[in-house]
Length: 309
Image 1: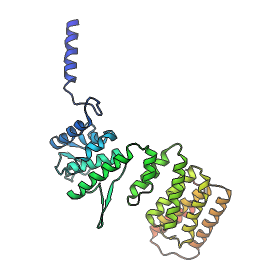
Image 2 (image 1 turned 45 degrees about the vertical axis):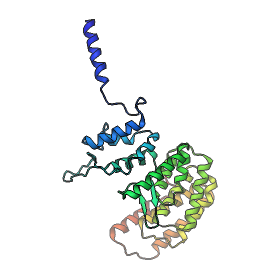
Image 3 (image 1 turned 90 degrees about the vertical axis):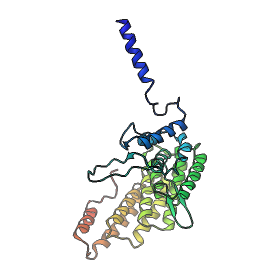
Image 4 (image 1 turned 135 degrees about the vertical axis):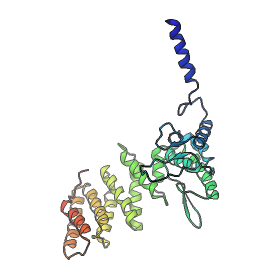
């Protein structure tokens, strides 16, 4: 019996020795691990939903792998890895090495990279020409050199003021929203960003960003933001508001709800604004498609100044 047990254990141990190295295995150098996963993607068929496949594992590498991944951004080889699709009639195209690496870097860094030239702005998410891929290698290497010693909060505060990529700004707001508490620097940065947006003018994109800033400041109970949020609400209410657009109207309601949560005086001012806007809406007949009219009427009938969130 003892001899039989010993034989079974020996077989088990020898079998484990031939298995693939585990993710983040410290015995395997990161550069070697990146090389192995890339070659596996090129040579073995797989899908993005495969938890043991190269697509998934590349995106779960530690941040220290970024300098090694950057080297493959100019690799145009096609892999045998495919995106997952639920549409049976589609014939999915396999990823290129560049696409796999771009997705991995974006997820690991939690940052959307871009490059602006005299003629266009390029995103790492796109299929870029070789010269742009080389430029991204330099840009990401510099980003890593500058950001590797920063905390996640410090990185997100930089992203909050990204002049090009709105996804970085929205991701920074989402990250701050998930934190149980934020520093004074974060609160100050949010106020400064909101003031900048109000000062520069609002459109559908910056208006959504400004309202998110206002709601976050109200949730943080930052009384120092009263003036900035009030300026946003007054600008939205008095600047020829588009009351016939449900998205514009919803943003205005959200902003005033945030303002109302900041104190009794702010609630009175927000209520006065919304009362005037509601009277303006009902003061004359509106010619809108029935579906749009129904949505706007429903928004007015269900709106409460203090939101439940």
